[in-house]
Image (cartoon, rainbow, N blue to C red; front, side, top):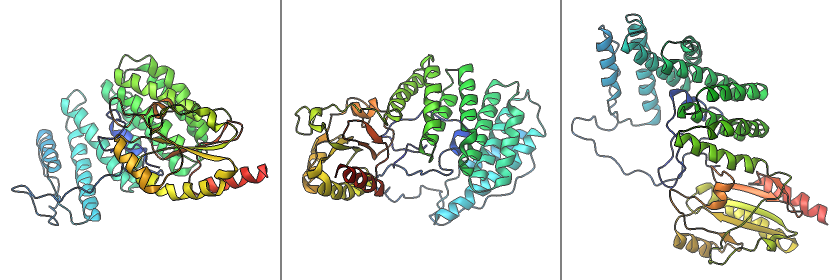
Amino acid sequence: MLLLTLSVRATPSLRLVPLSLGLIAIIGLTLPSLAWAQPAAPAEVPAAGEPPAGKMPKVPPLPNGTPEELMAFIAELKQNNPRPSSREEMMVYMRDVAGVSVQAANAILGQVKPDNKLYDEACKLKLESLMMLGRFGDEKAAAEMATFAKTLVNSPSPELAKEGSRLVLVSEAQQIFSSGNLDGGPGLIQKTAAMLTADPNDAQTAGLAMQLAGAFEQMPGGEKIAQGAYQAFGPILATSTNKRVQAMGDSFAGVLRRLSLPGHPMEITGTLLSGAPFDAKSLTGKVVLVDFWATWCGPCVAEIPNVLAAYEKYHAKGFEVVGISLDEDRETLQKFVTEQKIPWPILYEKPAGEGWRHPLSTFYGISGIPTVILIGRDGNVITLNARGEKLGEQLAILFKEAG
């Protein structure tokens, strides 16, 4: 599944609110983190004064200096535009920068008092750098970040106190997701809800809530916790006067509606690619696969042969597929459907506004594709995950039972 991660292409996409340092550590820990499929970037020509590709600058040791000089040293270091010859080379460089940044932050914190403006900056630098090291597998740095975050929870600086509190929650989330033990999930959701209640207008805490709910939704066995998260966070976000936070609350309602589908009917309405209205009554008494997809989505296209095989095998026995296209361009979609000889109905709506919005994708809080939902003959949803081998397994059971 293509997930909404912290780096999504601007169009088509669902935009995420700006996130705090701490949120970077949640998704990507143990969950899939594929970026949206997009063309390869053209080769870049180094600007004047930049090192050529493959010539990586060495990270110098931390010099002696005043807090201001040390902060300037780190700022200049981060402005470098290295051109690595490999991913590994870039990772080594980033790790070295993070390491010297931690040293600089500690040196500054040893020289300034909490009422100094550089104190907050040094704290943020330390948190950010320790987190980066933790992402590179440095368990000692990750533990140090969690410990340092706890010391900031009661900081006189409201911003630092909030960041510390968020990172404490992030640390708990890391432990849950890395261990796979979800027992602490409900407690984590409760703590996050309490923090969100204290300031419903805080977009960063709202972003953390959103990422946590999404992460639990993707964890095996985490669906119930995710559902509880959306139920807890949604009403709080609805009280916010921050429009971005309100928008997140609106999306929560859709996700909760989708997560509540198993065992209940799914509303399927819209317009066919031909422009004719879709007749939902045509699905009565059939086993139906609802597929949210797009032609630009690699995993969606890769799944089509599997769905075609299932369609050819079971269609005559009462199996139907309904595609919900999130494409923006009708001609591109029509050409793809014709060339691939897709036989099932495709629902398409010309996007109104930003990105690949379709009324049904909004209604059911679809945040990543492909999303495939299987409906039984009685009209009730069986599962929200019927991709790959799972589709064949489910259909074999359903049509064996039907005789």
